[in-house]
Amino acid sequence: DFQLLLDNMTVNGKIKPCIVAALSFYPKELNMDNITLDELLNDFRSEMTECIMPLIETKYSTYTEGTSKEDLIKSREHRAIAGCSMGGVIVWDMLATSIEYFKYYAPTAAGSFEDYYPEYQGIGDRIRNELKEKGYTTNDFFVFGTDGTKDVTYEKMEMLINRLKSECSDIFVFTENNMSKGNITYKVLENAEHNMDYMHIYLYNALQTFWK
Image 1 (spheres, helix red, strand yellow):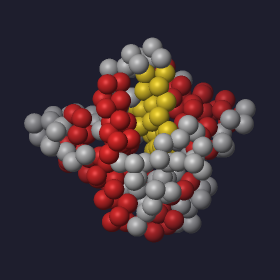
Image 2 (cartoon, helix red, strand yellow; image 1 turned 120 degrees about the vertical axis):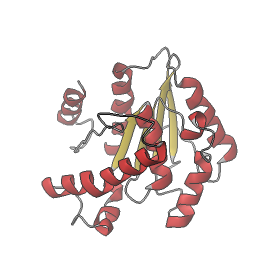
Image 3 (cartoon, helix red, strand yellow; image 1 turned 45 degrees about the vertical axis):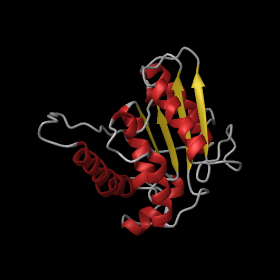
């Protein structure tokens, strides 16, 4: 149970107290004949930044002074986004489209959209354009990527990470865990498969890097 994991991590001093909101990418009744992937992505971004984030910042005591777009952007260093499987693909997309709202990213068991849909521009180029367009630098984000050697997404994630290393060294500096020495780390768990037990292990480690 992820809530129990969070409670124990907080009580035992593994992480600082944090607020977690769990969203779904897919509508309850999904018919891809009636909606495109781009429409789903736009709906998710809008729901996240225009509905969920202002709701949380209003209901709870946070680092945000208000709920305007400007206020949410100012407090980005206190916000992370994580996702598993398709959720992990979404995390890469949010880094390439909404960097102003989040500093920390934890894509788990996922490649990026170009690995599944060839018509999409490479994630490295999209992130590079995002940084340039919005005035952020390589010091303004940190990625904690994870996967397992027996996960069905492992090959896609390995391909993505290798591309980032070979083609995007100008924007990604790999490090073991030290955020002062890089902006991305990639961890692989031997024999881990595509299920939530392993996802919890990945998030357990990512959260300690972000919020310890």
